[in-house]
Image (spheres, rainbow, N blue to C red):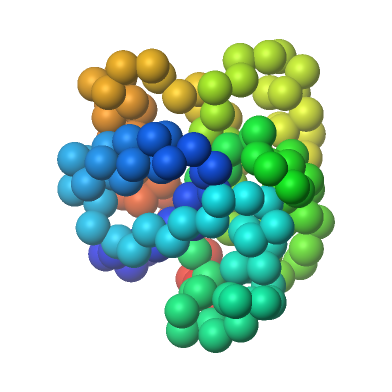
Length: 147
């Protein structure tokens, strides 16, 4: 895995986006973090459409951190689109959401989610969760090379 993995963070809440980026930086994650505020932009980013047509400005991420409850195309639909596409399905998708609903958890794993994390309500808990995520996905497992 490259020393500086890139992430696509799909999050509509400015507060949750800022908290996630702060937690990533506290863990020493120095790779690029790309941000999309809704599911439509996330799919445009991944398929290099619309304002994301330039692959140099919207490269294939090492991982997608995906909120479920998004305006427009939902996180569930984005997950299904990614995991149903031969070019995208090898990108790990980690659901990062407030939903603890067992139906959401099961539906996401059935659709191909690689992990499902609940957003801890306190910053220290959030940083610990992001540290474990970083340690596992970027220091332990071997991911396919970005294309």
